[in-house]
Amino acid sequence: MKIHEYQARQLLADARIPVPAGRMVETVEDAVAETEQLLAAGETLVVVKAQVHAGGRGKAGFVKLVRSVDEAREAASFMLGNRMVSVQTGPEGIEVNRLLVAAGVDIEKEYYVAVTLDRSRGVNTLIASAEGGVEIETVAHENPDAILTVAIDPRTGLEAFEARALATRLGFHGRQIQQAASIMQRLAGLYESTDASIVEINPLIVTPPSEDAPDGRVLAIDAKFGFDDNALFRHPDLQAMHDPTEENPAEIRAQESGLSYVALDGTIGCLVNGAGLAMSTMDIVKLHGGEPANFLDVGGSATKESVTEAFRIILGDGRVNGVLVNIFGGIMRCDTIASAIVAAAKEVGFEVPLVVRLEGTEVDAARRILEDAKTEIPTMRTAGDLAEAAALVCDAVA
Ligand code: GDP
Ligand code: MN
Image (cartoon, protein in one colour):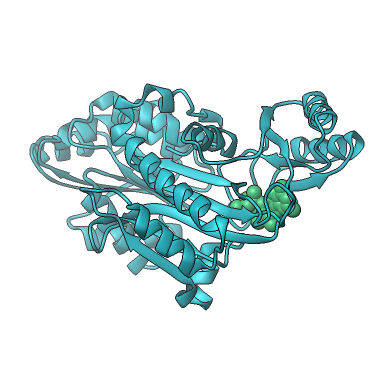
C-alpha cells in the first residue's frame, strides 16, 4: 500500500524527523486560506504540491513555489483542474484531488535517502546519495558510484556511528552531520516499526546558513512510503491512510473478490490460476507475439462467482480483444472454471475470441460442460496445451 506525501510527512514528523509545516487541502479556497495563514505566520515562500501516488511531479509542473495568495490560487486551480502527466503516470495522466500546501524552504543542497529491503542480500539497507532531487534511477544508471548503501544489522538497527560515517561520506559537514545521522537512524526505525517496503526521502535538503543555524538545517521536503500489505493488519493507523481513489478501479474490484489482478497495457486478457502459471502464461503470450492485458491469478479457492467476476473485469477492459484461460486444476476444479465461463458468456457475452486450456482435477467434466456450451459461445476455442493456446489466441487477435 502506498500513501500520500502529506501522510508520509506526518509519519516523519511523528518520528521527530524535521519537516516544514503544511496541510492537505481539497479545494482552491482552502489552498488560498492555508497560504494566507503561512504568509501571516512569517513564511515568505509557500509550496503547492499535487498529492498523487506518482512521482515526477516537479517536472510535470505539479510542484509550484508561490509567494502570494494569487500565485497560490493559480497553482491550485491548475493542479486541481488538470490531469497530471509525468514519467510515472502513462500518457493519459491521473486526476489530482488533493494538494499539500506547505512552508517553502530555500535549498542549499539536495540529498537522497531511503530504506528498503535488498533482496539479493536479504537485509534491510539504507540507500543514500548526495545527488538528490532527481530520480534515483537516473543516478543509478548514469553515476552508480554516487549511490552509497549500508546494510542494517537486524539485531542493532542502524547504529549512530554508521549513520555519522555515512553522513560524512555524503559530504554533510559541521552540525549537519549529527542532524543527517539522526534522520537516517529515525528513518530506519520508522521503516522497521511500520513494516514498510520502502521509505524514501527525496530530497532531504540542507538550507542555507542563517544566524541561528550557521551550518544550515537538514529537512525532509518530499517523502514516498510503501507498506507491506501482508503486515497491514497490525497497523490500523496506516490502514486508515488508504486512499482508494488512487488505485485502479478494476484492481479494487478484483481485490474484493479475492483475485490478484494487475492491469497491463496489452490486448490479451489472461485468466489463470496460480501466480507462477500466470507469469509463465504472460511469458508465452509474449513469445507468440501477443501483449497481455493483465496479470490475473484467480487463486486456488476461486468460486464460480469470483471467476465470473474475473471475466467481468477482463471483458470490462475496452482494450481486450482476446481472452486466454489457462487453468491447471489442483485445488481449483476445472469444472468450476468451465461453469463460470458459461455463466459469464450468458451474462456478459464473449464478443472477442476466447481460448481455453484446462488440465487437471475434473477436466473431463469441464470439457463436457464446454462442449455443451459451444453453440452458446461461438467465439470459444479449446486448446490441448499451453503453447497451442498461446498460438491460437495470438493468431485470433493479430
Ligand atoms: P517530485 O518531483 O514528485 O519528486 O516532487 P518533490 O517534492 O521532490 O519536488 C521536486 C523538486 O522541487 C525538488 O527536488 C526541489 O528541487 C523543488 N522543491 C520542492 N519543494 C521546494 C521548496 O520548498 N523550496 C524549493 N526551493 N524547492 C522546492
Ligand atoms: Mn521528490
